[in-house]
Length: 527
Image 1: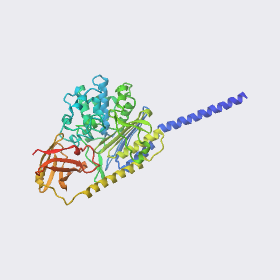
Image 2 (image 1 turned 90 degrees about the horizontal axis):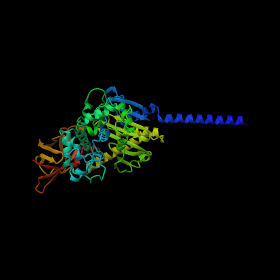
Image 3 (image 1 turned 120 degrees about the vertical axis):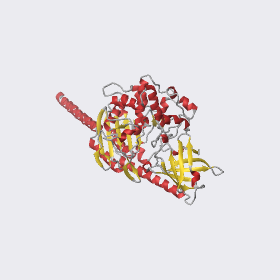
Image 4 (image 1 turned 135 degrees about the vertical axis):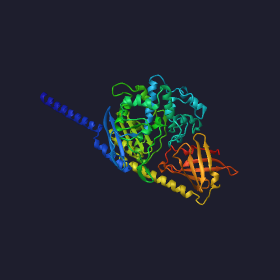
């Protein structure tokens, strides 16, 4: 009887052990899906959204799962993208700038909540109270009171202003909201953060990030300048949809805004970067880049971001919280904290997504301006690791993209239908000619010749084109460089005596990049 019971017990134990082994095997498989699963979703997204080349890095539990390239560096050229191909990571650079400041905090040379003027006595915003109260932390979290992308026309497209010029002209930009009351994404304050790093360390932002971050993390293939995207070698070419067709375009090559978006990197290096961030600052050799407490500061929510209803296709992943930390966006994804950022430049868009409690990191770098592609890929991979119900994210983002395109077309049609096409300008064309000045941007020049008007932004060589009558005293600035995709309405307001009082602008298309902040300009005639 005892022997029978013992045999039965052994069978139960063996059965339980076998079941446990099967569960472990299943968990291991779900933790590390085979590369072919990555391949399938990546290739489908690339085809759906016309992305020529893409680089993917995935890390899990402190290890590299994959670092791989897909497609080609440039349309019409067979050279493939691989794990070492460089892409501009654009605003994913912001986390590096925040980390650089964190290094200085750890060294006792900087305090997050010290006023910026303690380190840059010349720093000035348009409101004296904001100038006095703005802290180093405020530079990173998009709550300064500046409007969306305010001041970006000082550097986008490339201008003749230098970095210090741009930072010093902030004093002329009116605030859109009260200080610390609302989220509005900006770039120019990251330039100021770069100036803080230089003032404290004695090194330029470029030298500090290269020597104190990239070298220590082992990101030996990466560099820190927008202009490096123009170099020969294993660099992805930039592409965009121009006049309905995806084609190569010129890369952004101005180094003024490197602290906000200048790093070029690849899948291998971004994997190393994510491992350090997921490890709360620990490097591969067990030393630290930043202290764990400082690393946690970067991913602590500071500025809340309102949560809208969003498209119906995304209802399953609608966040419960959303906000911005120090160089990172923060929200939840299927109940897990998500540390993330995107980046966008002419011809490059990228996404970094990390789920700390699952020690999962995903970086997607592309050479075409399709955010839908990297979102579909990131969501698919995160769902795979989280064991979520399968969603066809490529189809979902295609549906959302189609609706956006239809909305833009409807907006253009409504604008054209409302146009008083038979109207004429109030003044002879030569009366519109002259130099006009905006307090924060500077001068534009409008000339009249051969029965037509031309416009030129004096500090931005590529913002040069014709002014074509639209209706009454509104014209459309059609830029000669069609890769800009940023035509703008130019409206003249007249004084009672028929002279020109002010000139305002706004983008023609709602799809125009927000960095073309024409709407913030207010020109007055100076000659």
